Image (tube, rainbow, N blue to C red; front, side, top):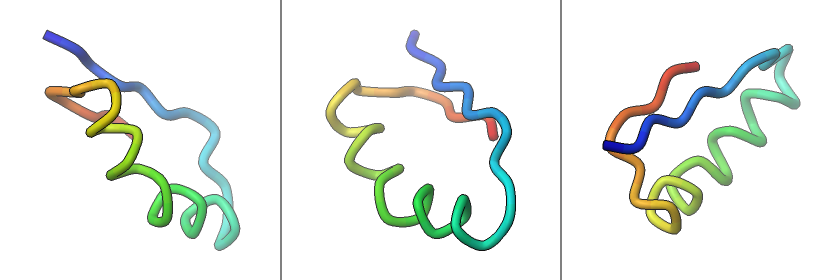
Length: 36
């Protein structure tokens, strides 16, 4: 089981970065759960 932890997500730029790249990271590393 792979868990991705994302910390220190701050402000609109941080949310945009996560929105734009999270799906690709989850797919590339075959993440089962993500905690932000």
